Image (cartoon, rainbow, N blue to C red; front, side, top):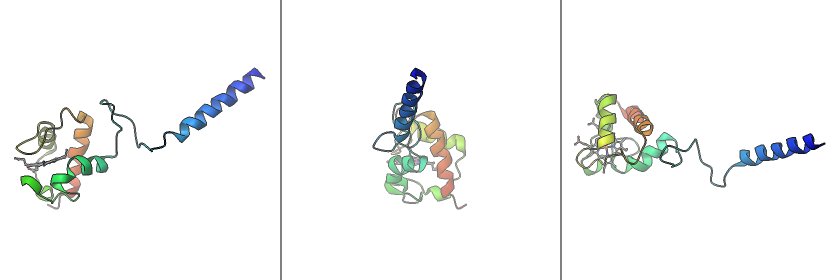
Length: 111
Ligand code: HEC
């Protein structure tokens, strides 16, 4: 009997945790404790203001990402440390997120 009560309360815990928070959080939390949004949302939030959702907005001297030929290592470097008006992300994002963003922007390329 005791065993049954234990397993049903275990089931309840599983059910409750499956429902999760009111605000749905996609993915896990990152090292910096922030929820890990999907990478497109992260790009739109952090980068879209200058580069635009399609990569070709070119605000504040931002180059057209559809024409970029910078390699992955170069993009990681640039996003990490910033350059001219492009803000560095090293204290804001994890290396993992930076790499994901550097990979993500390649989808804008038309060349
Ligand atoms: C405040 C505006 C601004 C924001 C925000 C911004 N950038 Fe930039 N970005 C620039 C500017 C300006 C350059 C050109 C830097 C230079 O070479 O002098 C640039 C260059 C780049 C390049 C290199 C393109 C090339 O081939 O030369 C990439 C890739 C890039 N940004 C990605 C991102 C990503 C990813 C984010 C979000 C984390 C981001 N940027 C946020 C302004 C911005």
